[in-house]
Image (cartoon, rainbow, N blue to C red):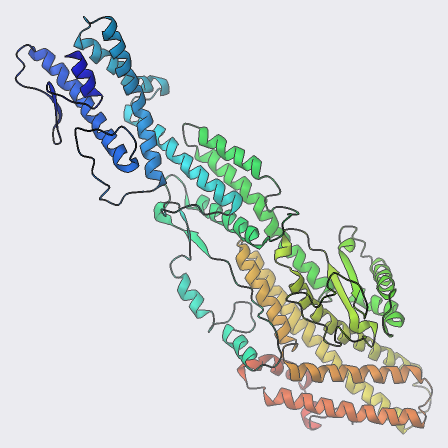
Length: 633
């Protein structure tokens, strides 16, 4: 009978110990040789065996490979329960049954050696085995010990998912059991749908207005907004009750940041890592927590904070980089470029040669030292470039992908001056190169050349004013009056254009960009805000509005030609100089009238509110209007 008992307790009932699905294992009632006390002990053991059979049945049902029994049918999982956490739970449950199975094997060996051992010995040995974990963990409740050990196995799955998500940006969750999911949270779709109609959130064009600009085909320009990556959000209902939502949000932030950088990093040889090559160390720490028998929220959150801090350092570097972009590409360091214009004027007024690039970089370094810009870490990353015919470069096959060619000359033509070929290169440190790509920096270069041309003409007109002041004590003629009146009108227009670009556009957009960056730790939001910022700069500075941009360039060219005429003819103009002055007066009058007509013709149009703002600067006292929209006569 002892062997029958051990088989029944192992899950194989027979004639003495029978199985009933409702009541479990039971001792047969028609056994006359059993004393009532023995029946009581056997029924107690049968209850233990019944629990074991039901556990193994559950494990078999959800794993399909553990202790298949022949005496009862194993039904398929009709409830639809599945997933790696359920399998991990079954694995933990099965491990908790292993001491029980080993005890049955030990009892079998003992009975083979001593067939006179009693049923009480079986009861005693199994009681010892089932109470051992309680002694080991100094916990009074056996069910708590079992639950903690099963949870430790389930936590192992969570740590593996965390390692994949936080260290590699991979969401390994086929059964949708993880508390991070792919896709927006509730209400996200509606927000995206409204984006086309509402303001983009950066204080510039709306999505609908930008589309209208493109539909008008005022200039051929590629889409400014790079396609965003798939959004991720939290699945709060899957979050364990003992993991706070604040920790889950940190996990979401880290994974999204790593996933974004991994997807943008197409280089076969990586120059860096958003985790600063600490993936192995963080993986080791996650494995250490996985091996702990008890889950410690303090240790868990400390590790999450450590990983998040490493990732957040990258986001903290974004404001510093956009400040550098503003200072150098957007001429935020005006004193630097004023000195540079003075130093480089003589070498850039002629077509560039093979040595021009070297010379302008020397001039740039000298200007930086003169204005006390001696940043040993920053200056080596900046380099002025000169594109000229025959220059050997890695882009000799054509314009870089996504780049915008210089506005003043074709890549195939010899630039008329070095200014037309001037560009600025900045060596963006990894991993921010995914935000400031070569195509993005080339767009900044378009703005850079435009702003520099305005600043250069403004400086030349101021120099002409200095010449005028030197000769104010001399007797002037009618030609001098025309000349200095034209200079005043030119300076009036250029100064207001410069003020509009620097204050109404650059400073306004930049302050809003910084506000967006500082209000979020989500790199995807930062990237989108920067895309909008750059798009707004190109639109509001009229680079995307071809008629206005062409008209402004013509005006700047006329101003430059006027300054050249005045500088080369300090004495009163001769007949030839007077004729050239007359051509400049008529040209400036014509272009200023065209500009006024464009600005005033669209002043009430919603999409061209920027044009209205520039017109407000130029015509704030109605002088422009009262002169018939013509300056220079």
